[in-house]
Image (cartoon, rainbow, N blue to C red):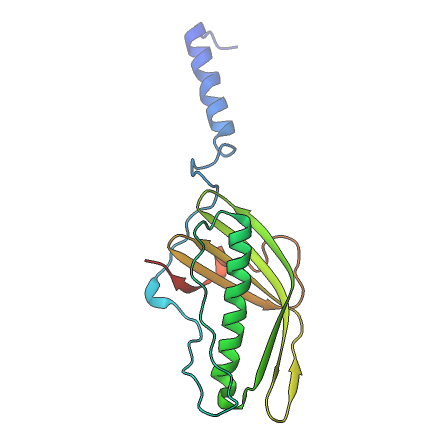
Length: 180
């Protein structure tokens, strides 16, 4: 046993306790969500011109950012509305004036995490569309968004929602909106 003074022993214990709990107390951020790195020059979302034709479906405007991205109800509404506009505009971009009708049905919405000024939320949905000659129904889709006062990141996959944050917009999200 080392021959330590009381001061040396207490200093040693305090150092060990500090190291042991360092990973448990977080990074000091107010809301627990790390702000992702993003580049507004990489914003990528469908923004088609209005197709010509008397029966062509018009593009949808994207929603305004939520006043408080940390408020669950505002975040869910924004994510669901944004995904509906995104999906509709993607179809208009690919089908052009042939697209006549579009429907969007959210099946489930959820909050992954929200804090003082940011949140991660998802929507599982199906959609359908019609042209003059076809009616098509999608399978299940999942979109998960990270939203804060500066940016919205989106990630998407086919299929049903799995537990956790899959897909994860903080790891694989695409910039779809910047608010400046």
